[in-house]
Amino acid sequence: MRILCTNDDGIHAPGLAVLEGIARHFSDDVWIVAPETEQSGASRALTLTAPIRVRSIGARRFALTGTPTDCVTLAVHDLMDGPPDLVLSGVNNGQNIAEDVTFSGTIAGAMQGMALGAPSVAFSQARGFRGETSPLWETAAAHGPGVLGALLKHGWPSNVVMNVNFPDRAPEEVAGVDVTVQGRRDNRVLFAEKRTDLRGQTYYWQGFNGQLSDPPAGTDLRAVYDGRISITPLHVDLTERDVVHRLKGVIGGAPPKLEPRG
Image (cartoon, rainbow, N blue to C red; front, top):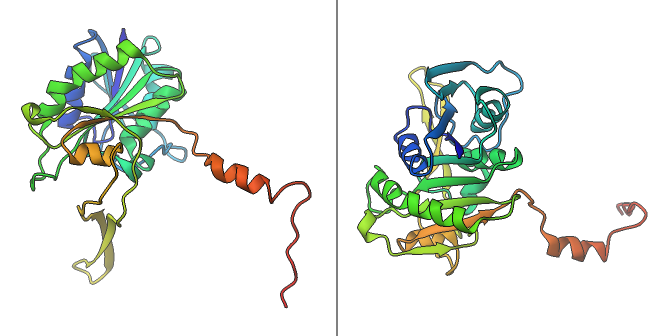
């Protein structure tokens, strides 16, 4: 089995080394194609207005001046000696749950693998729940092979990406595994702090406030909060079908006309 590994934290990220270790439980034919620098929050961005530089840093190992989507695209179309049988993305430094999945470069790497015909899995290691910022990489390393093995054994549809999040707990303290749905936070977690540089110019630094929500059971949020591994099947179809059906009953046929103001 030929496995392609990528990430959004960069070619030298410790999580990528963990991911490679997970991959090598299943194959020796492992390829690493990752961004030269961190691309967190890049989502499915493509580099279209600048050249992409590729640097070979070892056998089957490349760094790109692009996004995770660029990495998977170039790996499949040019850098590898054949298409991958599996694409793994991560292990991300921090959880990718709830709204995170829409701007995550880690998820995007797996999405591009899926789009190019390979079963794809995104892995993330949650952090910050213990009051510490450093992730417990040993948790992903310990449980990643078993989770991936179970997924490969049972399979999943070709239009689905598997999103795996490991909780912020030591390996022996993980409470179990839940197959979940994507949750939604009930508070605002992304904020921008206004600052002033040494020349008196204003700039902003974005980040997350770390405030926990109160999610229902069955969501990725609740699983990770409760110390469980979350496995969420995702796909790129963002259509809300209930709204489609409702609007079809009131909008359709001839283009609607706006009534004059008055």
